[in-house]
Length: 369
Length: 79
Image 1 (cartoon, rainbow over the protein chains, first blue to last red):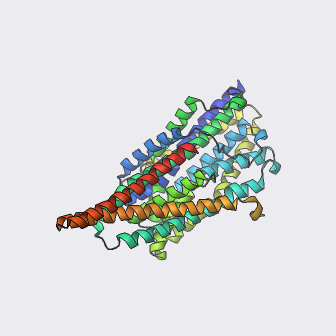
Image 2 (cartoon, rainbow over the protein chains, first blue to last red):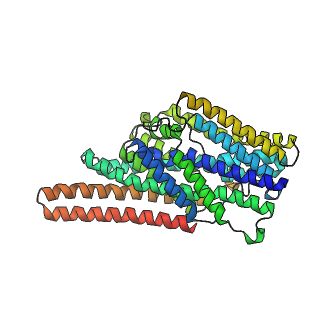
Image 3 (cartoon, rainbow over the protein chains, first blue to last red):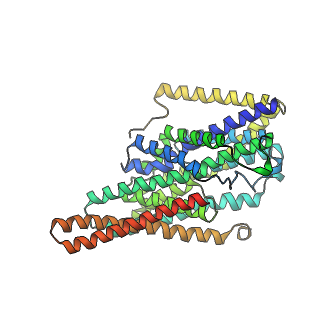
């Protein structure tokens, strides 16, 4: 009975993480399209939600199970997964509150690593894998996207520079619909998979799925796709504003170059099996498209805040994940700990949202801007 | 330590492929815009041959961009 309750809590928490993932990372996909007026805000998030939903079905190869090779898989328990998810959700909500784009995947990895350290100790974490699979890609992703977007926008300006701005803007706006769509598909394929992987692992640990006959149940695919699509449709407007207009004021060519570079880098990394964070890639692309035109066009203070958030993501999500695991263990090894933490989390989020709603719509603030 | 744990070869491939694809798509789409814009201007001026050449440029640019999108979807579905 206790195991059943923990399984249900893990599944619900994983879907809640999936929702925050869509909600938090909507900005990656739609911000440039909105800021250049290629799409209206509602249409952009609606399209992104649909394509995120579709993207979740494109590939069911749960190849990159979260934290695979980084932590000792044999030592993972449902409670560790739960604590890791809480760490990731909490960090996603904190960075959303401050309008900072940060990697949901890193938050999840950080949360699981932190909970693992609290449960088993440092020996359960492979430091070299953490450096090779997480830290180095985190450093490389924005640099590659920055360079590609920078060169791409210089090429675009060189070619269309002598044309009248009207047709050029219309053309690039049209292109942004496609490049934004590609980003949304790639995001849905990459990120919904993580939730599917986590829920499937929980089902294996619970004995619902034979580990020798690994498959993702249809209800897991459907629920994960729905959660990320609903999160995307809710739209994290604070981050959209940061990404779309607070880093640079973009023209349509810059928006297209940033999205094109982002899609190229994400797909290249998928093709060669080198996972990179969607958030880091798009942020790097946006900065590159701005800096190539004029270094001072980029608001480096905002960019600096984002980079600080990236650096803090794994340690902070890890600290929250570790603390969550510690709190659950106060109540023993049963379901009481996760139930208490879940209820406390729901109450805390409800209080924060209620306060924000009193001051204005929490979800749609800035939707029209 | 970094030299041994990081797969620099794959990372290099990602960087080169990203550069070629990202810059290539922007180049192709920019040429399509040039083609479309100039084609309209040439047709308006009654210069049919030039309009045809720019129409071809537009079609090639759009075809390359479209091929990149199809390739991207194939990459997503086969990973």
